[in-house]
Image (tube, chains in turn brown, red):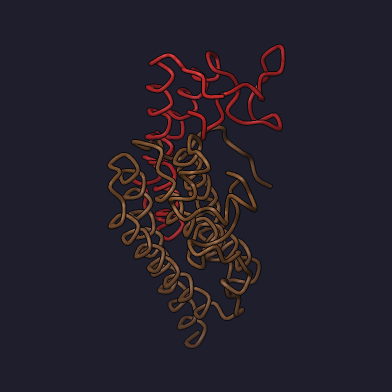
Length: 189
Length: 87
């Protein structure tokens, strides 16, 4: 089971109300390489992965939910004081028409989240390579959003999240090596 | 909705976030380096520090966890703001 802890993993600040940045940022909420996809991908794969890497998938999957909450906080803070006129100017009129300022799991272009964003092949190497690729794509997405953002407070949080993708990718690469070692042991003994 | 908290609240919260970050990072590291004795010593050291800080936090600002992982105040204060996105 899971316990919720009433705190963010890392402080989230934004300099000003900026619905346009929220529009870009929602990519990491409900996009293909976003935090929801990441959490669901790892926590789903762990049931059939070899025992040696179940702990890692559980822990990274859990951390992704903490990141999802940070992204939600950023989007909430960037839009909470926005007028309908500001939402419209930011290209968020279609979102506002459907959801007011509620968050929704869709990407920056408004396409709703779908399970086709994640894979579960049952082959441990295939699954872990998928996870490494997902982390690298998420890292790149954070970089593109940082490049679009002129909010130094927001960028502080985004840089933290970008670095977490690097660490996760590294840990998944180590998991691949652990599984290769295990596989080779079985051949020779 | 967004109530202002005293400066000590933010300071203590950030201290907890820093210590818990060390623990997240060490957890993932130990998942792939289970025999690193020094890292496990660090892990247990910071686990203790995290518990101490959270006890102090909960005394002033209410429970961080529920389902019994934190003790309750009277009356029940789990619903009290600020929630993390309101901080």
